[in-house]
Amino acid sequence: MNNKFVLKGYSIGLGLLLIVLFCSLIIKSPYIWEVSADNVTTSVTVGNSAPSFTAGPTESTESSSTNPTNVGTNVTWQATGTDSNSEDYYLVVCSTDAVTATEGDAPTCDVGTWCTSTATTSGNQATCSRTALQGDSESNAWYAFVCDGNASSASCSTSSQGSGATGSPFAVNHPPLFSDIGNNSGRDPGQTITWTATSSDTDSDGSQDTVKLLVCKTAGLTGSTCDGGGSDTWCTSSLVASNPSCGYAIPAVYPDQNHDAYVYVFDSHNFAAASGTQGSNSSYTVNNVTPVVSGVNINSGSAIDLTEGSTTNIDIVGTVSDSNSCAGGELETVYGYAYRSGIEYSGCDTSGESNTNYCYPEISCTVDGGTCTGDTDASASFTCTVSLQYYADPTDVLTEFPTENWLSTFKVIDDDSASDSLEVSTGVEVNSLTALDVTGSISYGGLAVGQSNDPLDQITTVTPTGNVGLDEELSGSNMCTDYPTCSAGVITVGYQKTALQSSTSYASGSVLTDSPVEYELNLAKAESGSPSTANTWWGVLIPPGTVPGAYSGANIVGAVKGEIVDW
Image 1 (cartoon, rainbow, N blue to C red):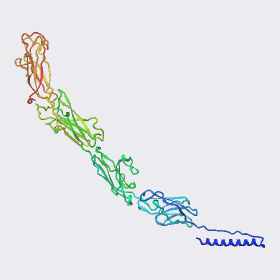
Image 2 (cartoon, one colour; image 1 turned 135 degrees about the vertical axis):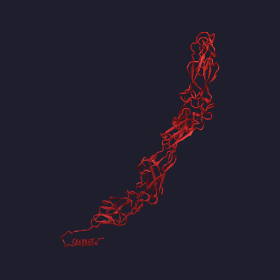
Image 3 (tube, rainbow, N blue to C red; image 1 turned 45 degrees about the vertical axis):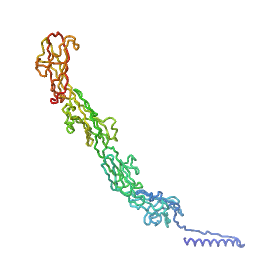
Image 4 (cartoon, helix red, strand yellow; image 1 turned 60 degrees about the vertical axis):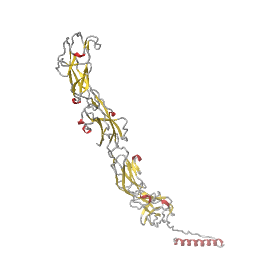
């Protein structure tokens, strides 16, 4: 207390007592009738008092080990101070319990200042903030003061550290370290791609020392999740002490290609790492897998019957499975091959080896409807249709190749040139087709009784329309004026003769009968669409007693499989 103030108060009190006594005497005294008065001046000096806390101090948002303040964000303090002298005050938060008031200005902390408010009206709330820095400790003590800025005797309150979770100290959460990322790229469909981060957290206070890895399909975050949410996430790890890893199980059917993968590390408070590795692209590759052929058959496993003088369509069927999908152009080329077994696939695996007698290579194939439903489907059934010529080599009995059969191979090449092929396990026979075509007509002309075609001069030409060497069978009928009734005017069949050589005399010809007789044409098997042909010469003798008229009949030229040696 100011001693001068006390002494002056005592003098004033004594003076007042004397005045009262004097007045009392005047009133009581019969001899005093008049009173005189004079002014007495007063003065006082009021001393400065330090403001005090009436609310707080407190952290406006809890900053504790369970809810730390991330580096780069603010810790904010608030308090209400009241100054008995009604002066403005400052809220100052110091790192130690030591502050110095400043006359006419804000106070300063003796060691370290966390923050200082602006001048605040007494009774109103003051706030101040400080940004958490990378160099801050995890736990930081604080001491709050309210101070006035009195011009002559500035003064501060005693310190307060608040209380509870919003009291001292405040906690700083540092970003985790993230220096490298790796993955086991080059995985097949059905395998797992795994990312591993070189990462840890320098904070060591309880739950603050764990980290997790997040891998996104596209770059960018919303908070601590991938921008696109779950559908945009390859994987996320659990919280671990260091080096978190997570994996993505590649579906069993998945296209072979490169995939972007953006990596992020967070601590247990979802505070992101700040290194250059954060958000980098750790892409991975799904390998191309070689497709596999199965279930090959030719002509549904049945023997092949060819079509006379034409082609016959047969199907080669196979199934292709590819773990990179049967769709999307993955299966770039699918071929079927049909060949006689003696040729083997190695003799019929390129277009340059094509031979319509025994080798049909690189037959185009198409997907059977409904067997490949999309990118997630691995298998497709294919059908390759080949047109076999009528002269394709037979492999049944009494042919050149009775111990062989016809085989097929199915081949697939994917868009990365990986290929597979499979030969049918059981081949099929190509049956003999014994067939011919006869051109020309037998018109013996005008002959008198006793005359004949001498030498034989009517010609029929045989062309093979099957796949074997040919002989022929010849037979005929009587020639009649009323054929086929033949009730009158008959030239019996035996007056007709045939020969396989030109300029054969009538006498040397073979007598035609009404029953088939084989003639050795020895016509070679057709090897192309322009096969060899063979001629037969015909003639007739008009016997005595033949009634004049126009005679007609029918002769038959039949196909006979020739001896193999003559093919």
